[in-house]
Length: 351
Ligand code: ADP
Ligand code: MG
Image (cartoon, helix red, strand yellow):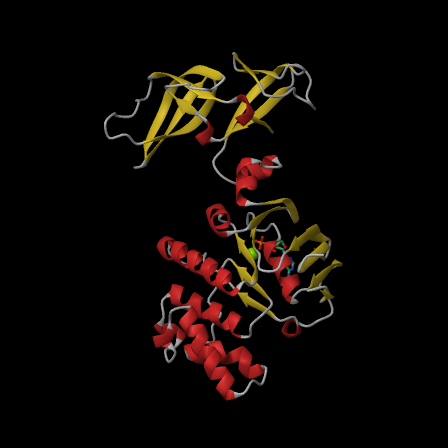
């Protein structure tokens, strides 16, 4: 059994079932993200783990112990929310000390812990300030320190960065990850931002309509999406529409262009329409070295993004996005240019 063990969790509000048969094991010290669109049930799962919401059915165990009947303050969990939920009438130090006061810890211990926590979040000099005197990023760091002060066994972060500016968001997300690794604390991080989830997690749970669609490392989630939803929600994806030409031989007709896949096509018969997924970075342009497919297309548009040039190539009625690296010695292709693009058959996923 895993350290945090969620089994067949279900939650209905009236007739609306918003969490459906959610099962997940998280190891001690692991950092797991819940990634999914708004309304898919991420917060509801988190609130059930924290004890703010009672499951309709299912079990939650922490360290082998069933916590379903424990109150939130008996679960030894720290939580950070999206909106800055600091007490406005308390200083930074008093906010961080709050949980320890409630727990009746001696003053010397509280003072020492507050000092340790403020140093951990690099705000040692701001203990006497009030929340309104802090930036958004600083407020979230205080919220993190407050959540960690009671030395919880599990840390729950519900979109803690989504109210912040892009730059602060990136630096604070790296700081959260580094603090989490330093403390070795088991953490669930909720986000609807794929880059956030992929960049700092040991594993990602992609959620869709109350279910865990896929659980895996960022590498697996991105490269081996288990469903059409995961493939399209995570990363940029080309979806090519075609017809099955010869299912047994894996041949697809993409608007007049015949392509042979790495494997026979199962679940479709000849003549069926079929959607194929292809990541932009799996496509090369110009030199086709080592690729088993080379197709002539026409440049549809070119977006110069700086280090990368995102280009769309028309193949009949399909369009394929691909990324080229900027090369100061040679200008990018232009709209209307005829080009050859290439990709490996194994990089085409049948959706
Ligand atoms: P997420 O965090 O992924 O955006 P939530 O877990 O907040 O999603 O919500 C999932 C679904 O459950 C939504 O459709 C939401 O409206 C519904 N929901 C959440 N809390 C309640 C509640 N207390 N009463 C009724 N419906 C709720
Ligand atoms: Mg939410």
